[in-house]
Amino acid sequence: MLLPTARQDKLVRATDLDALSCKVCASTKGYFGEKDRFLAPLVASYKSNLQFCDGYTALSAERTLRAAFSTAKFPLINRGTFLRTRALDMVVDRFVLEQKKCQVLALGGGSDTRAFRVLEKYSQVKYMEVDFPELVKIKKLAILKLEILQAAVGANEGIDLIEVTSKEELRDMYSDFVTERYALVGFDLRLCSKGDKAQAAAAFLFLDPSLPTLIISECVLCYLSPGDFVGVLRFFGDFLEHPSLILFDPMSLGDGFGHSMVSNLSNRGIDLQTFQTFPTLESRQALLEEQLGFSAYLTDMAAVGGFSVPDLNWLSQEEVQRISSLEMMDEVEEITLMLRHYSLIYGEKNQRAHFPEELQWKLQPKYK
Image (cartoon, rainbow, N blue to C red; front, side, top):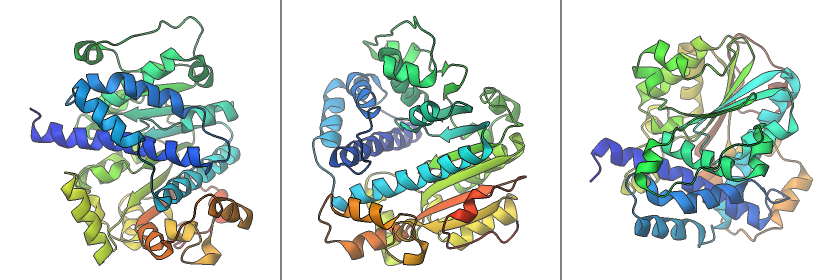
């Protein structure tokens, strides 16, 4: 039986599988153009190893995986998955193109494939992913099994294959995997806020604090308490000399739809503690600029997708037409309402990039 905290952590870890299944469905439907060839190895690793994770049996793992991957997602979910992935990719690409030699730190990298794509595309980038040790191990096992992933992260030839056949073997397996340009590290981000700061800093020795660094948090920090949310951002703001960040998180807006989101998530045992503490773009801008010293650009996903304010659309007309042709979507009002409750924020400290001015934002920095 799992303790309450362990049960909550299991539910949060399970959101990584939800995100993976959404990306698989969107990729299969053609939203990303060419299919993401890095998704299948991660799905295979989950199917082989989820049964050995805490809180699962072979039967419950099979049931969980079947529920995740056997049912097609609604068009509005596929559209939302595409928009968040596309928007984050646009920021990452522009950051790297402007900075040239730089670093990317993905908080909660889990089953995300962005690291493989970025490392293949940009030779001067170092990329670090941090997540719960179990999720890191599942990804590491996928990398060790397939040359396509090893090549993407610059792994040396002759890496030993690891086969896990029991809970004990997965538990005792060393989680981290490091190459010259890539690091995959099992670490609880809450320790950046509550633990020994020197110990927390030791987990990020792969990073060069003097290099421009983009921190990605895609629906990750929202699962922390407000205190830990602020503490983690403050830690990286102090640890890195030139930090930038891109945050994608839900927000309540204090309306009926927001209350429904809270209720639905509560029924699943998930508590988004920052959801109502920072309910609007304005409150999140105040946090980043007034408390943490970042300059912040903010928008919501309805604007990014062209559903609410056409002039703030991030997509070309050709791209809008392409994705609109993939699936019939009658729930335009519903997806507009849903996307308004997801924030996209770019922040930077001790530097001034030019690329944010090329994108459309609802709120510009008050302090530049």
